[in-house]
Length: 370
Image 1: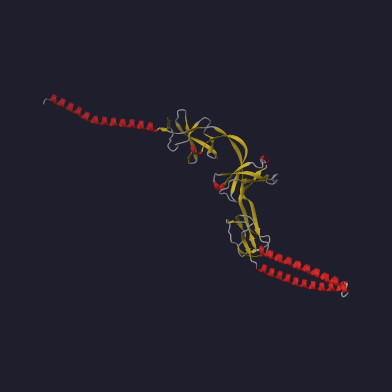
Image 2: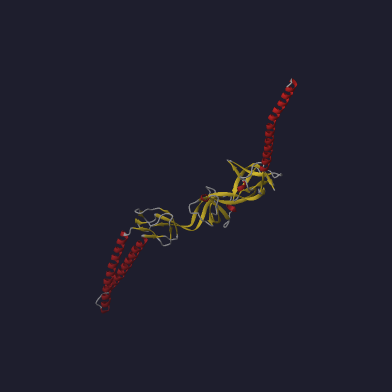
């Protein structure tokens, strides 16, 4: 092979080598480009979302309220105390128990009362015996008087003795009645059907007249007692509807009506007591703390559904929809919750639209497709 042929052979060989090196690179670039095109196409497709419901932001007129703290009370409550002195023998109920009218709740030791009854009955028998003697003496004297066998003075004395003895009998009968009544007082019964709200004594302690022993509440009706500032008192009316929020029930509200209110404010606190008769009170018991919401005016507010608000740590946001139906995460400042809605103080304006569904599938920048 000549030198020229060798030179050409080397050139052809180098070209073939270059082609072999470039060809795999072209294939790699081709597939890489296709992958990027597919990824770009897929990303663009992922930016669209279907079936997102939206709602227009509109300002609404809402009530301006003033809250007043207070406590739930029973409409009727009775404090039980003893009319006799003695040690408490039994208390068959405990706090929270339901009781019926006439049910025995407290029993006092009755030994002293029994002794007093026996003493009174003995005095009555003695008085009756004295009356028999006095009547017999009167009958004898009155029988002799017409015959002149007894004097007027003797007849008057016999009459006085008889009448006096009758008085002693009546007094003894009263003592027996009183003693027997005291025995009945040894058993303290419930004046109403209700619930044992408080128990202020224990078995073995001494009961004395006037000492409170137990409190019974009639649970057929409850009321909320609170104090309102004198500034809103003139606007309140009997029968006015008031919502009461009970702390133990979360956001639940109980509807009631003003049943009673003081005619004038206390000069010291500048407030007046108001009693609100509660309606449906399932789950509400006496003693619960809450707040009554009195309507004192109206104002305009921007409200959005509670479920449309996204909580990002301490921040709140919504997905706002622009004219091109593109979703944008928008930070907002929220205010008071009002049932299923919440007030938006800043971040939105009337006429804008927000997403109200599929919030967990939405990403910032997605477009709502038809």
